[in-house]
Length: 114
Image (cartoon, rainbow, N blue to C red; front, top):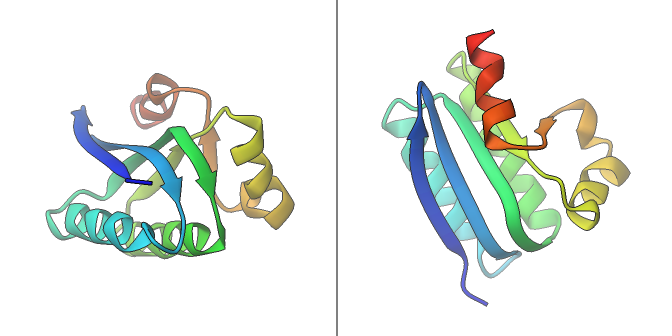
């Protein structure tokens, strides 16, 4: 399955909407896109996972790496994730303690303005 990646901006945040399956075959594109955003000076990134059908451990590894990269630059990586099957991956792995999970892009970007 093809991975869809679309970047938009919401205030000081870059929003990366991800669609499809995030697995060993597609993570190189996701990693490249995230690295590119940080290289362009985007250190506040919302990853919108609402259209993700599947997320495996290689995808989680890319997200953890991206989180470290943005935090090193004083930024934040927020995740929009309401699908129970995807959210469960974060819960089972304990990554809900590491990532900020939100129900919408609006909610995620509002944190920065508060």
